[in-house]
Image (cartoon, rainbow, N blue to C red; front, side, top):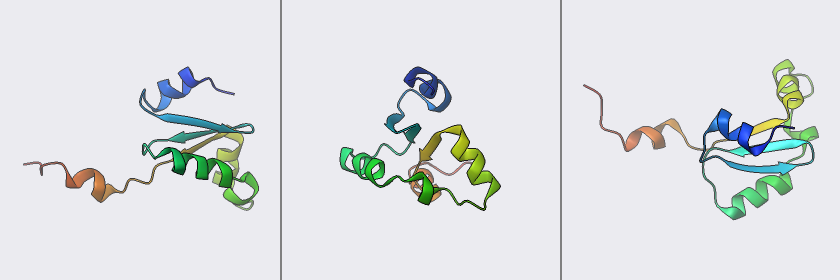
Length: 83
């Protein structure tokens, strides 16, 4: 299992990290503690990963699950348009 230091090297110093079983849950969207708790409680690998999807199986084997509920519009609405 990757250490918190390794996770931060991959995803950034401000990332929020939680763990459930053998999985590392990486929260890029800076959620509230309640949201983190809910994600952790509700995370079930048997339901989260589709058994017929090769990509899901690769992600499952990695042991890292990334949450990021920011949408493109939310990220870009605060920025000035490029000339």
